[in-house]
Image 1 (cartoon, rainbow, N blue to C red):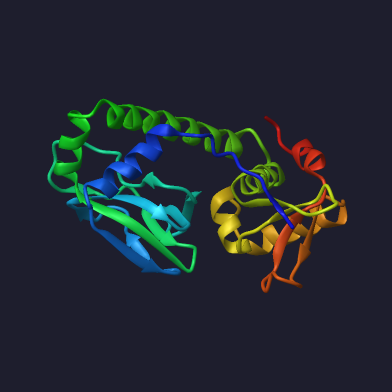
Image 2: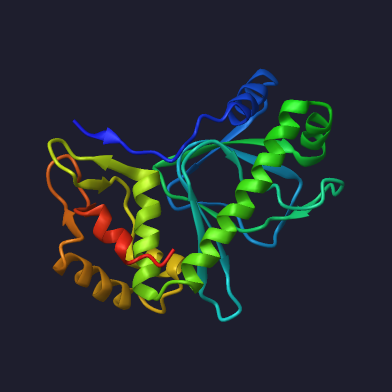
Length: 237
């Protein structure tokens, strides 16, 4: 049996938001694996709140490359970054489904803000949302500017441990229980090609930091962190 590792703190405001939407009978939509919910820059009249599933947010750079922002695997608003007074607003990023399915609450953005402005607990949630996004953006900037490429990779793997880590039984090893490709890793870490990611992953494997598994209950290749302390040694901050 595996034990879940999590960085999720008890958040009564998120729990309240989900309960509020459920009680208001806000409609939901469900999307399938690797389909897109929104695209960066497209105008929409809705606010989307992840109810269940895993998504990846990203933007497309001027040179055409995709820059990955984050994985989100718990209930959260995913399109709340612009002026509340606008009926239509540009979507802040691409949102791609990374689990077999993902379900979202969909609510008119003007209606959503009316709810927020008349409810102190929803206001607390929005304040936390913006604080969290600021902290997340700062951490991402640190990862890309204060580490070399290998350090950025190690920092990203550490994030995956917090979001998707499972402690393996009778072991200090941690399984990253999520399918992530070298191409996606490159997009998160500012690495030019997935081939470069492959070389760095091989180095971490040779140094006893990680290994891979594709047997037993896990049908696809998964990353196993053998030594979290060694992984942390590569991270500059």
